[in-house]
Amino acid sequence: MKLKGLVLVSLGACSYGILSTLVVLAYQAGFSLNDVIGSQTVLGAALLWLFVLIGSAIRRKSLSWPSKKQSILMLLTGTTTGLTGLLYYASLQYLSPALGVVLFLQFTWMGVAINTAVTRRAPTAMTLVSVLFILIGTTFATGLLNTMHIQFHWLGVALGLCAALSNAIRVYVSGALAVKTDPMMRSAIMVTGGAILTSVIVPPTFLCQPLLYPTQLVTSH
Image (spheres, rainbow, N blue to C red):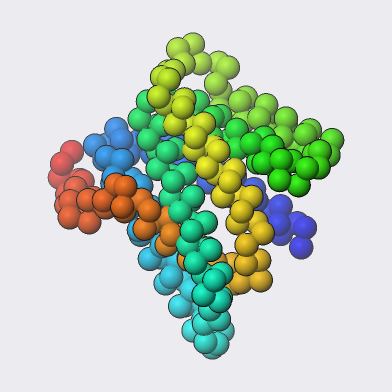
């Protein structure tokens, strides 16, 4: 079980590592913030619900819904998922992918600080060492120290740090919320909450823009 957890966490970390590069490439291809965050949250929520239905059909069991209170709490917690993506992707309009990743991963020590403030218990030495290794390793892995001309922008840095704080809150709250609920169902509800928030702040204009369709992307080049 511990090995499975380590593998899943590692895969999740890898997805964060390539995310900033993909977002910057999307901006360079002409996509807007609305396109990027909208397509991720709206289509992501739709795919997760599809997986929930497929999983239920494979197991031949009816869907096990959480209570109304838990569902509402998960939707509200999910808004931090949308807010995190919105802030992070907005920061990448001003920052390089390498710097964006380093700023975003500040959520590790922010999460430790939140846990310390809430529980009033000092973090263990192992926790502090782990956070230190994550930050140092990320800095070296992104090649940030080897970059001669680092693209700094005060607004980008502020947005990146706000994204990190939002993600730290998301991780802390979701870690103790409806832990007995099916993980896929839990993810679907929370991502739906994020999709609702981002759709209100930045309407999903990609739904009516033909630029997103592959055939037109090819012809546009």
